Every structure is written in C-alpha cells, then in structure tokens.
Image (tube, rainbow, N blue to C red; front, side, top):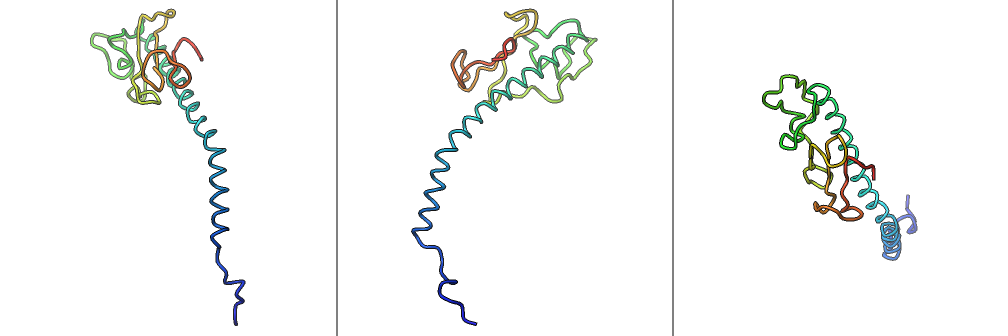
Length: 143
C-alpha cells in the first residue's frame, strides 16, 4: 500500500506560528487575571489564619483566664508558658505559620482595638500601612 503525499504532510512553519500566536494572545489576556487571583487568594489565606489564631486564643483564654501577653505571643498557643497550670494546649496543630508573604504575624495583648489581642500581617511589603497587596491585614477588621 502506498500512502498519498497528503497523508504524509507535516505541520508547516506558518501553521506553527499561528498556533504560537494564539497561545501568546491567550496568555496575554488570561495571565493577568490569574495573577490577580493569586493576590486575592493570599489575602484570603491571611484572613483565615488570623481567624484560626483568634479561635485558638479564645480557647486559651477559657482555660487560663486571660490571653497570652505580648511577650509570650502566639508561641503560647503551642508551648506551655512557665507557671501556668491551667494551660490545656497545644491550641494550634503546629507552630504559628508565617503569613502568605513569608513575614511573621505581629501579636499584641493588651491590644489597641478592644478587649481582644491585636494580630497583624503587614502585607506583601512587610511594612506598616500600604495599599492594595501591601495593605495591612488586621484581626479587628475584615477588610
């Protein structure tokens, strides 16, 4: 059996360039949307972690009668502080993680915003304040 020349033909350079151009256009249009969602996902992750800390801190307070001091920090949720017999932890399954940008959370008790501790992620830039992805994410606000 003899195959026709048409069945043996490969992909031409023009066809390959058209496919590459379509892929590039698709990436240019969809890529920024995907990366925008990555930033949103990081902010959502930080909000969820802060909520998890606040839940664990509530359990800590129920057992001990008070929140950990600023000096004890979130580490008191994993390691029993000296002289605290009512501690029934650990209150977190693992050490407090870094925020989504690799920075440690800031913890303060007594806090400046009510009766509960203040927990802060300084955002992508790791500096206080900022806008957008660099904005602080705080325990006393859902923004």
